[in-house]
Image (cartoon, rainbow, N blue to C red; front, side):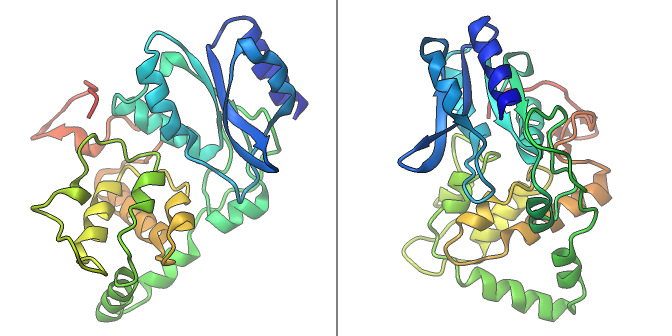
Length: 269
């Protein structure tokens, strides 16, 4: 923790950033907190959130950057968070020149639980690199099902949905100003469970955008295996477009293609 706190203290005291978005213990629970040069003593209390108490810091950074467009901010990132930043750069939601990652390595236990192929940030300021998980056994298990069995399996999962929007609200990659999940021409209202189209529309939006943080599945009160669904969607994007979601070298997202031409231009959604 000393290395991480020292980096944050230097960034703040030297004026390299206007603030550091990390975690502070409040009422015995780690919560997102913006550390600033005016309250430099708080850095001594900065913590790394445990595996079971994570928040979408990437998402919290977006409105902060919008409010202070000239300021740079540091942010605590795990491997998935850094993948999120890379995607948000491509979509014009954040400026990479104004973001300083403070990297964290996940534990082996967390990496195994998430079946994560990249469980640490490119620069590690806290923790030790563990072994990545190359394949998802959960996805492979679903892939063994016959088509009709798989259809019924997912239909049953979708029927547990209570349309709480928790998956969308916690997702660092859900940044659209107008959400399709609330569009009256797409979504029926006043019924539970909602039409299966609700989950299918979100799955399409997550293909090539999901950074596999798992917050949606952890938030879902109905226990829908959303992570498996989005892992599979990303795998299809990889097969079809050779696009590695969250990679800084993968180029623009396939969904930024216009006809046969690709554009590198990024504009807020």
